[in-house]
Length: 307
Image 1 (cartoon, one colour):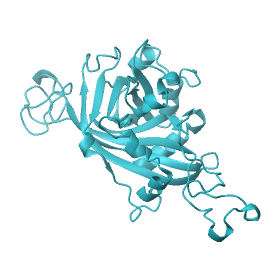
Image 2 (cartoon, rainbow, N blue to C red):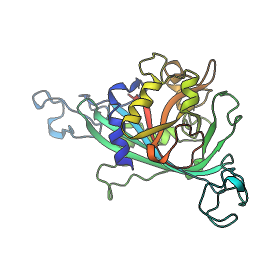
Image 3 (cartoon, one colour):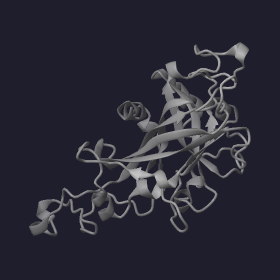
Image 4 (cartoon, helix red, strand yellow):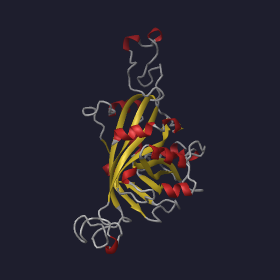
């Protein structure tokens, strides 16, 4: 799934927006300030201990996936049962079944994948970091009180967050020791919790279904460089359906406030404190054009490059 997502995301790489992250290590340093000396040998300042191959990155792109697991029914009545199971039996999704409805809280599990690029223009990737997590997603008209158009909210259990990058299994995986050397582990920062963490920007995401977002005129950035309707059409051309826009909080106390993300990202609505970051999609054959809830497998792409 992640491989196919990378292919889809690459189609839009020319349209991605950039946001500058203070302290983000960049390749090209020749002063060995963090072990990345890439100057020519003729002008090398530590020829006896050259570290030109050291870990370094200039930008980060983000992607991921999620699985929303509905544990009950979908609000159909017995006369309008839309599954093949008998009423009340396992697999039945109408109101005769016990359990939750599709508008109730559902269990979610997923990953955020961060691609660290030494040179994104040349497509030279340093490594990929995979952060696994579990949580819940809830859909209701009042799911997010500070976002009038948002139809859902995804909340990640901070105790479930785990960096599952493993070089023994995947050679392209990031080594935590490398990220520690450059002092900027963005995967951990974006899922950090607790007072003073200045992270945790991904621990809660507000969701707006695509039809609502387009109807309200929501745009990914304040510059207007990419039209949401056009983005949805480009994704549709790949055989996928954009179902939702995901927003991160700009209300204070997270990584996104640290980088003034709300000054460049499109807001969920006038004077609202949610900024567009993700687009949620899946194969067109598995979704519907008016999909408001999440049920089943989806992929995540980001409108943004961090650099």
